[in-house]
Length: 263
Length: 244
Image 1 (cartoon, helix red, strand yellow):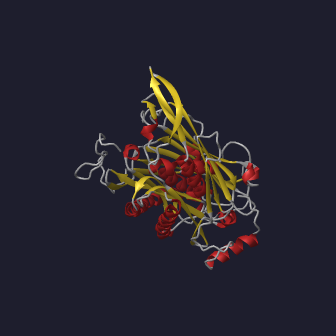
Image 2 (cartoon, one colour):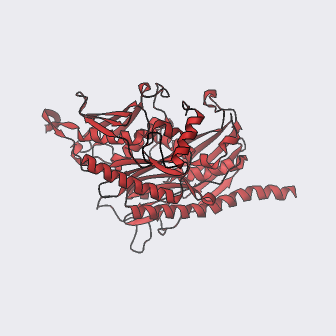
Image 3 (cartoon, helix red, strand yellow):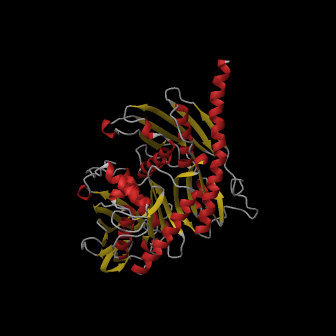
């Protein structure tokens, strides 16, 4: 990770956090302001842009038809891809997805997939032959930290906004009919990442804080308080107590957000 | 998953492969198995067969990855095409890229990166046969390979998973349990430092089950830790006897 922040600035962030304070005057467990816009890309079947402070993530959903996986012949297919495009940060370069964007996509994917929030069987057109394939493309527009939570939120908001074409099967042929039905959504997983700086836990880090953060842990949780996906990242470690604390923080923050979004 | 599925655990609490809920698969660990690597290790963890090789500290390639104030650890986790039922393309998959990253991040806390500026350590993991829990077994082997190379470490890193199969929290899932079970929680742990360096999960667990799974995985790690130390001693004790 190349450093734009001087060592002095990094030291300042650490010292502030030791005192329970942050650069932008938030408390350690305060989330930045969240704004969600849905349906902003007309050509996509679903879309949403999430603002998390200065972080901006756009997710477009395209729905196409394709073959199901052999082990799930009557289920639709979900694929998540993430692009860290160069407009989002001076540290992002054009080119094929690197380990960071692959991890981002896979963590977002895991939260949606494992929560089973999409009714996959309703995406089946002809068992074993034809199903709807839902492409979720995460586009990071401006990187100011906490991309995982912003991307997961935007992906979910875009899926809620997604419409799939009406269809009928005539003589074994797929016919697209007029009109659209909403993507069958059964639940709303919420992803909360907790970071560790100076051995203290914080949520929703900004980019500068991420540079001093030695590790992070992400929990995706469901409405009923169960956990459906976890990912630890960064080159530090957590004590077992900190892991449990982080899981509680994630559940609490998710409940707060659910209330706000009515998810 | 669906009700047609046969139970993975019988009424007596015995799993399909004959283990109890908190029982590890048989393990075999060997250190110093490759003469060209600076350090190497081989692990058989159930049917998983994995080789790990460590090279360095040496020059960083490509050069622009070099860091002026610390060592760079690079890890490649790679599965052999014949390691799984359906042939796997040898090109790195997105899964392998992610696993390489999380394995690297699970090992970094054990190394004194800041003591070796402008150098790199490369760890290569080749999964020869996979049967569930390869990332954990890979971490166990990779830590041994680094230790064998002589690079100082704060502690060994051990990998072991726990999860939920049917209604039971179990230790060390193998392939069928991983695929048909409810949840899988891979953990990497440094026992002497009581530090968790890798934690992932997919599936559904409530907070109590999650806590139980993490504790069970840490207990599994502690058992494997003893075997790791034994494997290192086995190699270096032999050397000592020859000297005498």
